[in-house]
Length: 170
Length: 423
Image (cartoon, rainbow over all chains, first blue to last red):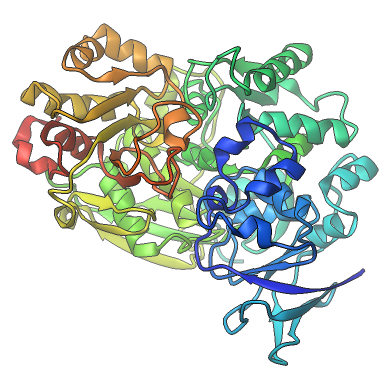
């Protein structure tokens, strides 16, 4: 399998917790990600949700998605048209939830990527590579284990389970 | 081959192969838990996956603890749907007011040495206090486990936390957890297990161990596990008839890191807004005015926590004017215990607001929400902006004793000022 994407970098710092991505109180009103996407990042930057465009890539520092394991922090991102998040490290629950919903988490050295940089991501069995088209720099991402790649390539855990009905050894 | 850590042993048993740090294994799950915060999405995923029946309903537990049982609330239909699902499929349901999920998973005897438990709530790591591998997952993973009884896990590396000595007066398990968070940082144990060991770990009672396991996730840990001992066995004796086998690490197990903490060197700690690892000695914040003190949650709402707070409050006999003191026992068992011994009645008499067991105030999903610009001191585990439902509030995390001392004076206060009144 091979996934290739291109998008604009939207920058974040370290320790962006899931409540900053989407306030947990929002999920009392609806679980519809197409509604929730309008409230993304509201407690840290109320203007941000309106500026995110389909195809953007989130670029963060360490520990992206820490805190609560709530999955709307992934589904609302996906609904906003974002297909990949690049971070120096992820919280493990965010990482799992991302894979399960077809959002590509790329663990790589994001230092040096500037706001609005044009990025190209190539993900395959041999690993992940980010090309920063603005600086010309190439960044290697940590490779994904086979089972995660398979879940991602099948479009997430729902299509994976519709096919296999169990976890299978890749 | 070198020896194995507790995590490697439990995941080897659960996966039926020799599981070593870094391996990806598919494991049989002993128990999977979801809450009213996470089950509604899990049911959506379950349906979308084509799920019609559960792999084994005896292994699934739902707990309603995040939302109030309010028919007028937007969350009521979510609970109603989960309630109907539980009834139709034979899932054990703890309805509103029974307690916080992590406390119930422990109290009910489901969390036992050597077990593999997953919960769709990040603080599911709490169960490690009873020598189980317990970890947090999302709603989609819960749905998958409901269907097939299994989950994939990457076998974590382990950091051994060697505790020695005993804590001085005024220092509590919460202070140990905060000290560790300050030292490791919010991702210092990312995807790793914290294995608590040493004479200091043995000296902690189960209720104290739960605080450390609970807070492990605030350092990014996948699990926070203690050895099983006579205290573990005594705790479980009253709660389950199921057999269990304690899991010990091999003497030549391989650890990623070893961290030593001399408990005698610790002092009361506080995490300042808005990060759990922004940890200082409580003295650094002493004098900061507070408008709310909250004693409760899966971290600091057990009987021992509330009694420690109550000792200070009763000695003072009052709450400072302008301070809202809110107390929520972690479960009905805790609530009953404290009602029977008179603690709750006396707390109410000095003006504390008593809430039914639940998570709401901690994560802003139920009142009381802090006032605008309020400073809150809390026994909870997270102090992120807007965590309690108001983005302008500032949350300080501390021990139950420090929260009580601060409620008495109206300012952040070192609990040692109240001398030896605390049990």
